[in-house]
Length: 103
Image (cartoon, rainbow, N blue to C red; front, side, top):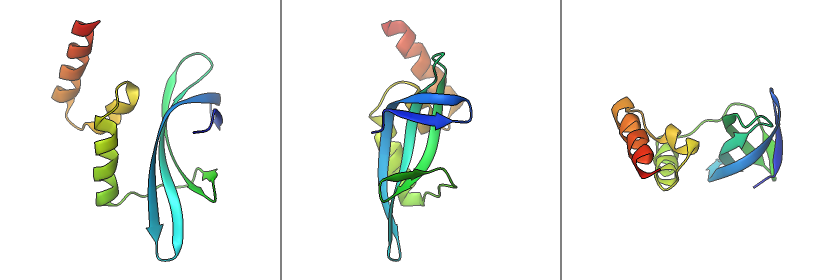
């Protein structure tokens, strides 16, 4: 996991990262989902891919199976990254309420 990255809003620190190795024909690459924090503490979720260990910020395409693996990884994590895991606003509200109850 890289320590710092550059975004359109300036530099940010990588707080968490999920790597999804993929291949297409003879090409090997890794899709990334990163939780970032800017200098003011604002959080971002960045989707990127790497080839030969170099991050690329072009379009990221995930196949259905890749999305299933992404959701499995996200389900095991807490924090802002987990927000990506749910499409259900009611489930998201229930998670937030449960977190508040634990605090």
